[in-house]
Amino acid sequence: MTIRGIEHIGITVTSLPDAERFFIKALDASVLYRIVPPEDSGADVGGEEMHPLNGFPAEMKVTGLAMLRLANGCNVELFQTEPATENIKANPGQAGINHFSLYVDDIHSTAEKMREQGARMFDGPNDCFAQEEGKGNQTWFGMTPFGVLIELITLPSKIQYDAGATQSRWIPAS
Image (cartoon, rainbow, N blue to C red; front, side, top):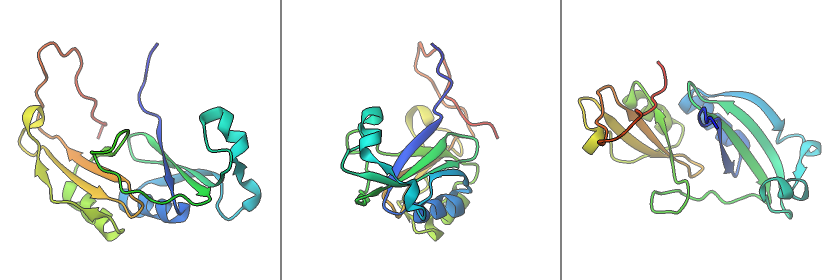
């Protein structure tokens, strides 16, 4: 078995157009395609069709579904549902996936673009510590308007690995 990497992450949002706009304007993403365009009710996918495939609630339906390309990393799949889901503010104290991190070259300009698009930026940027410590190595967290926690990270200096580590951390190509 060979795992090549994360191909996409899926995010359920209250408004597909609003989430698309955030990813496009704040993070320079591009829409690849819309399997379920939100303005086309004839394209909706019923929950009973999806439930056997991935556990989607049979009583709901997908009213929007788009695939976006996010720079030199994984794709982002956005879902809009009916009834609409409530945006929940993620945090690292919750079980399950609670954030994703984007490698950036300019942490300040990316944070500013996120802020301009409605993200709440936490205190930052912050110097990395422990194995990630190094000149210029920083992180900065922001909460999107739809409740997804995004960590911006830049690691221009080498990081340290624990004894016995057989691989190095994957960093997207410039």
